[in-house]
Amino acid sequence: MFGFDPMVIAIILLVAVATAGIAYGVLYSRIEADKKTTSRINRVKSAETETAKVKAARDRVQEVSKRRKSVQDSLKDLERKQAEKTKKIASTSLKVRLVQAGLSATPVHFYIISAVLGFVFFAIGFFGGAPPLVAVGIAFAAGFGLPRWILGFLIGRRQKKFLSEFPNALDVMVRSIRSGLPLNDALRLIAVDGQEPVRSEFRRVVESQQVGLSVPEGCQRMMLTMPLQEVNFFSIVITIQAQAGGNLSEALSNLSRVLRERKKMRAKVTALSMEAKASAAIIGILPFVVALLVYLTSPQYIMLLFTDPRGHLILGASAVWMSIGILVMRNMIQFDI
Image (cartoon, rainbow, N blue to C red; front, side):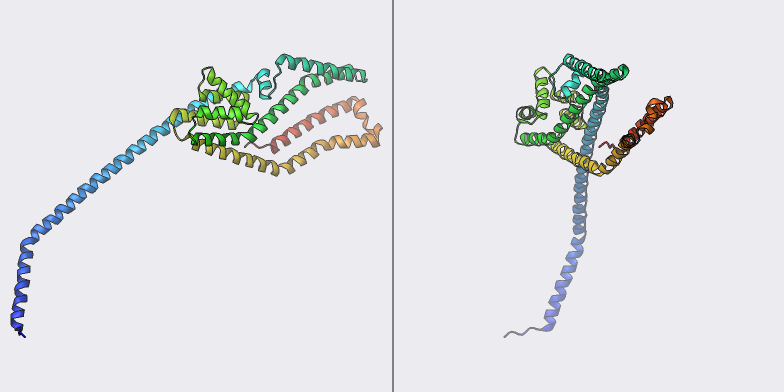
């Protein structure tokens, strides 16, 4: 066994510590310089990275700004064109209204039917013992008002059917575009396999392309035969996608969802307003019911309104006030969605 002198061990440790201290003192400046150099290099790299990120973010912001400006310009142009089309639609001819109703009749046929109705009701009123002026009034109402009311009813019914099928057609277009079909083929698919009246309207869009119109122009022309806000939304989406680009399938999918939500909201508003409509109907028909009951119980009492000139004045004033009240109630229970 070898023995170790504690003094020798202590001297060795002191020499090692002293050597390490001297080496650290000599190399400290170089170590600190290396640390500062490394830190400076890292800061420069970080600054370059941040500069690149800021530049990339600035480029993205500029690109988004340019695209937003392009979309805003497109929307302003579309609003201007839509205002012109709204004025044109407001003064639509009888021929366009017949097309909107889905009828194949011409304006000449419509006028002939109106004249026949007027003549038939005039004959019924005249031979039924009505005064000539009353018979003429009945003929005018039947010949001028009744056909136009029926035409408006047919237009409204066709528009309701279109709104019911339009979201489904948009969903078919979305699936077709996502599967790789171009927009033209998706439109032709609806024009061939869609439900009426959506099929007829999309067929007109496809036929307009065959005569040289673009897809956005054909979709905008749909407003002439189907003047609905939903069709306006669809034409705006197609026009913006054609001018500014973007994901058309996603835009059409969002539009389909919005149209379904509008339909649900319209049904909800209709359900909530049924009480007000029933009240308005009861209030509007109540005077006529009371007059009929009074005539059945005391005819001599109420006949003064029809035989005395003062009664004629009262009836005229009552008709005016009743018309005003009915119009006010109609405006109160109608909601635009």
